[in-house]
Image 1 (spheres, rainbow, N blue to C red):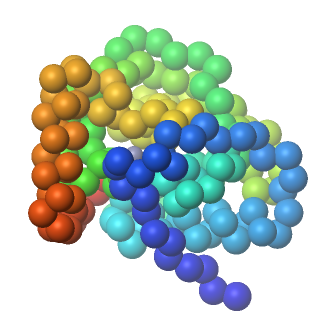
Image 2 (image 1 turned 30 degrees about the horizontal axis):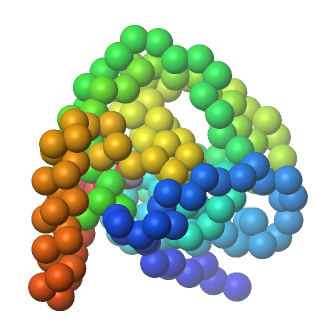
Length: 182
Ligand code: ZN
C-alpha cells in the first residue's frame, strides 16, 4: 500500500469554499488520506495542506514548516481547533491553491491549538511565527476561506481578473516552485 499524490484544487474551484466537517471515525481510510496529504504537500512543494485542498471534507491538516528536515516536525492534525490567540503578525503568504500570487496577511502572532493525532490522542500545543501563520492559514481552508479573502477587495479582484484571463486564454496556471506554498 503506497501513498498517492493527489491533485491540489486551485482557485476558483468552488470546492475550496466548502467547510469541512469534524472527523468522527478514525479508521484505516483516514490514515490513507493523511499519508496522501503528506506526500502531496512535500511533492508540491508545500509546508502545509488542508484536506479541503484535495477535495476532502474531513477536518484534517498536515504541516511541516521545516521541510529541509523532512518529517522531523511533521504535524498531522485531526479536528484541529485554535483555543487561544494573541498579538498580531504580518506575513507574506502564498498558497498551493492560489497559484502565482503572494500577499501580506495579518494574523495572530501566537496561537494555542488542540487537535487529535492519528493515534487518537488529544494534543495541545503553542505555536508562533511561521508555524502560527501556517496553522491559521490551514484552519481557514477548513472553513472554506483562502488567504485572498483576507486582503483588500481591490487586490483580490485584480487577482481574480488575472486568473479569469489566463483561463479564458487556455493558459495553464503554473504553481511557482520557488517559494513553498501553504
Ligand atoms: Zn493554502
